[in-house]
Image (cartoon, rainbow, N blue to C red):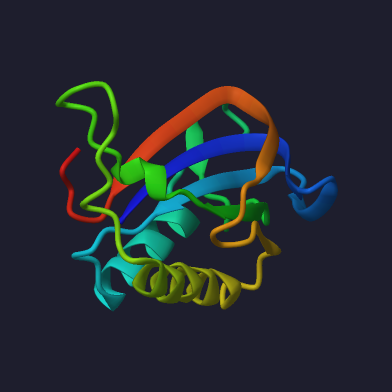
Length: 149
């Protein structure tokens, strides 16, 4: 499982002109699921998202997590995180999970995140979405549950 984590002041998802999810200060999470992912990857990713210390404390150091600061999280499915661009000019998505498996594990991550008590918003799995954000920092990090990077 892979995620692009962006610290944001605001973020929202729009589908066909309608806003379907929005947050104020917190994290925008673009989440991709691979064909090899399991429930363990869901737990790992949710824990990392909730506890990654990328918000500043009173000294200006990144010592606070989204959980510590009571922030919000917007999770958007992003199968293209498994696009392999090493050969040719067209990405290959053979490592991405099938839609059924990806939906199940994407929803599992969201379920775990919601147990934190934080406001969790989402896009809509499998839809074409416009993602609007105001990146705070900017701070953008990559996570991989298999620790490939």
